[in-house]
Length: 101
Image (cartoon, rainbow, N blue to C red; front, side, top):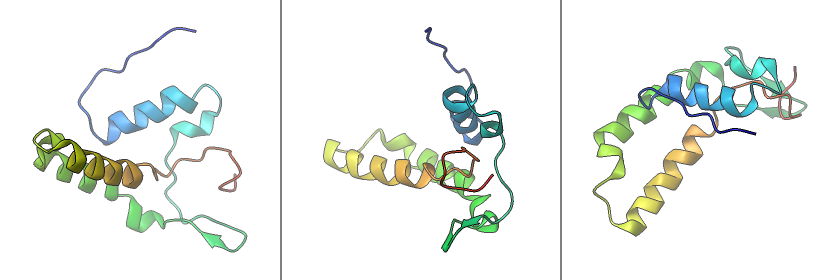
């Protein structure tokens, strides 16, 4: 195994590139964000209409906060957790059983 680095500015495309780097070699569909509402059994995932602009909104907020550089350690951990949890819901088809194919 080898290390591959990503180049570019941190943003929505960069997050997508990370997803492709991690899962793209396993699931070809991992490179495509879904753009329709998806549900499985009785569970409805985040609607595409709501989510499609969310990464840009969160990343702009993070940039306005100077990427949390000026926070105390405890506050940094708190805010970082918030952003990681919010950004972790990127709408990719992962073939992991959470969403239908």
